[in-house]
Image 1: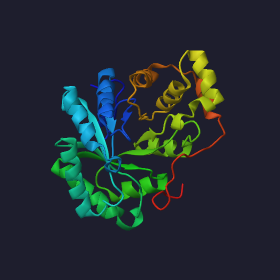
Image 2: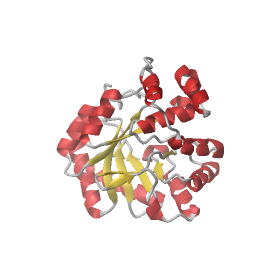
Image 3: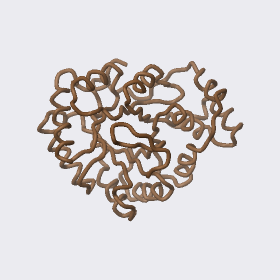
Image 4: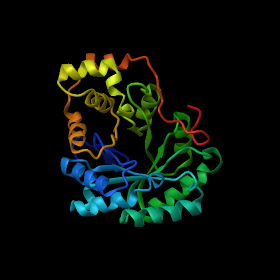
Length: 274
């Protein structure tokens, strides 16, 4: 049983996960294993990250039973036709060294209105075959999520989006709470810009923790599951411990009041109209 787990559509996510983007080296693998030792069990990778093999090796070499992990990966934007969904997922399974992927995301809603129905039908068949446990989406707007829910005969378990104190996603979080869809924030540490946020620095001093930990604690308090990326043992430990920070309602309101908005990632062609 994973600490702080919540149940949605038979898949339970912990309060915090481990991002692995750009982690494609021996150093990264050792960092992931250190993260597992600290307590991380929810792992996020993607076909686009070209590191599924490293993530899989880290799981195997850790000696931790497979059933303790929740492993998520994402379909590359060019792998959304049914044929490519099946083929690319088989390749992901082989690279990860796993028999089942716990969460398979559609990475971006690229061409979703044209082929999304076929993509989701193929993913549903993968669930029936036991190749994946659940279906998720990433970088979807609330409208995209509604469309996916209406099309798919399986639950949409999560939507992974950029979210942090400069991009609070208030409408999306409220919408997903009603729909029973997890929000999984990426860039929860704002590309390292957390010390540029006075409110985070102030609360960090108050609680004797870092501004980065305050950002994570705020996201967790919002009921989301942030996936900070690190292979540094000190940062991994600090990220893990952020789930134990007790923010008051006044603390939360202070961060909620931040008016600055900044999105760090919005690639042309594949990003939706936010």
